Length: 333
Image 1 (cartoon, rainbow, N blue to C red):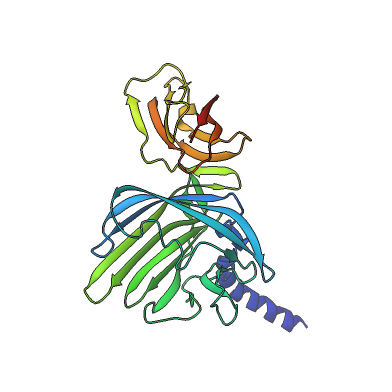
Image 2 (image 1 turned 135 degrees about the horizontal axis):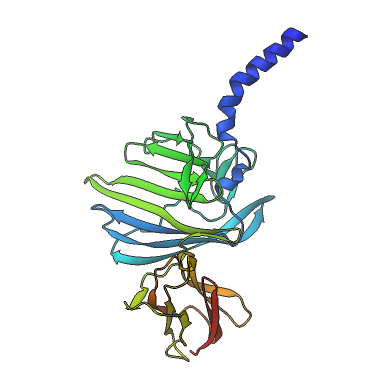
């Protein structure tokens, strides 16, 4: 009996170091899919095939639904262009879609629902990643390998520093005859980096796409810069003495209006915290975030486009340091 006990202990000592790195805590935390969570990325493209541009992309989990007894999360993607003109800036966070997605808590597989296709072991689902993969494990992403993607491997499980904290990390890279790239998952945050390189057609045209996480909202906690604003303008280089939030102009408006605000210097460390400027409807529901980032002291103006919103009364609120002020505006169409 004692001999059997020592044999069991021997195998546990050998196997546990191999298993543990890929199974730390709740594996679903590497991609938190709760409704309301969102991620904002800086996206850019370069190459003869897709041109060159940069922009921002927001991915927000807006609902969930149950199909065949499994819960999938529905995401909404919004993109804005900062500069250039190109194809595909803000696409490709996953290889197929970031919509109708779930993580299997047992296998650790990231799965996307597909009504017409699927993996043999999981009908109507396409596998994207396996979050329980150990270092150097190969993964048959999209169910089967192809000459387009010769190998797909877990290449890094070291921790990284993100948003001021050390966090567990999983990096997956692939290399094929016509493509290469990879993406990074960070525990408690989600996907923070995606890079793809594609050779298009027989003419040797290439396309490189990058998506880098700027900020996110996870279970109500804000990390980094989650604003989608591209055109924030500095009104004056003079540092104001006090906080201020001006009445929007014009008001009433259709469909654009300008909101001005000021951040003073004499606020201790408060100005180093994120400045937030948000829009709420008459029921108090948040409908837009115009600013959510650290800002230096100064006076700024922000444009809000109400094209996609119904007529009615809206409120905009500035939160900066210990200062909070809310004003009313009216959209008339």
